[in-house]
Image (cartoon, rainbow, N blue to C red; front, side, top):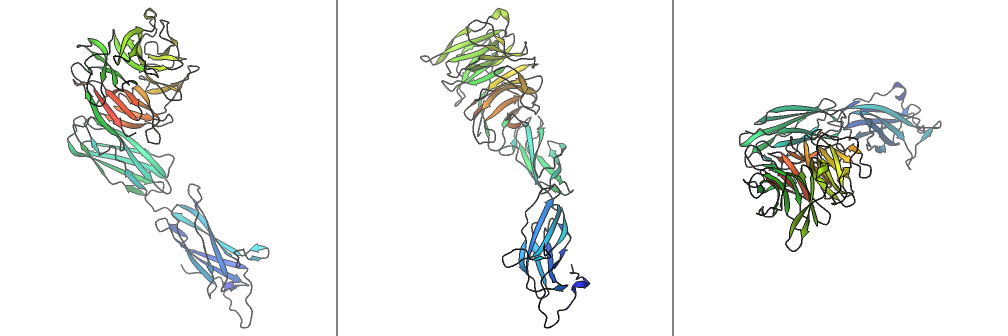
Length: 524
């Protein structure tokens, strides 16, 4: 752009006259509207003294720049001297955000202090605008460790979008064996967003690289960008999948006499074995029993720990591991004691008064060091407390009639107590002092069942509650705020989880003529 000199400034210096002192600065910007792709503004400032351009004057340029969201951005200015025509020129870079700004050109002395005239700094200002022409950056995050999926597996497709101004919308599309198109409006206009879309691979999906994922993002200025497509390979052998960083493997597969109707899983503190409550109509259970599996080999102990009188729904150990508690539905809370000599739990004792039917429909339970046994009672829609295994009737622990179908129960290292409500699709907190029930997780969890606390520091899924979702066929990790993130995808609905250290064990239900299975998930 040509610098337009005002008529008052086009005065030639008379020979023999000394240079006047600067008392005015004229400033011009080119272009006045900057594209964010280029992000460069050219500045020309002229020092004027008594309407005469002055050469050799020290100039300092500063920039005040705010984007359309009201955020200030620091932009480096420039310094230098005017040339023999009295002008100083510089390029200002880094104007990458849509917004407005002001350039100030000031005459300064050798120490950088403003030169004053009439009690005011000798300076001039000019404004500019930046229009966003930069498209967002969008990426489809790999949904599984190797982008392999199995028929019937649920998936969380996460799309990561960044933009210097903010993203307004993300459109997701899957083609091939998974045909779907969905969109999400980002009301906050966040500059860094991860949008999650939940889908499920069809049960009859064709094997091979038959699913392609696409994503398109639009920023607040209307600029669009597409992500690089991601191809998923369908493998019928995949029954469990995990997000990148985690690894799911099979521990045991059910048989005619094992995992015919799995209900609960727990890890034995003394032997590290997996204790599984299983409903079976075949020997050795003939109804329901607790079986033991070696997690390293998947070997099943042929001798059942105990055979129930009804349906064994839950298993829990106390902190020492010396006592194993289990719920024998209906009406019974039972205890077994560890025998160091035989390395087995023996002698089942009834802890409550069966005739009172309290609890009347016991499901999962925990053993708390100070409170005793807490059990989710489906029929009474409460959490019941059995302070000691002493033939005294349990008392109501939760208050307010806040459950429809209490199913799972767990606690964390701080003593917080969590309960899943299968019918209400939510997880609640029960105050350990008052029994008051409050909502724990804002996100809806479709038909939650078993849950357990997973320890571990620093990892994406560490130190969080792990919740099985029957309808989503997923194990979710939640830190108890407003989000749930899938940690495990399963081809069959999960029933229960058990955590030991940073390893998670999952049992799935029997379905469509297939027995239940036991899986191990590591990498937390």
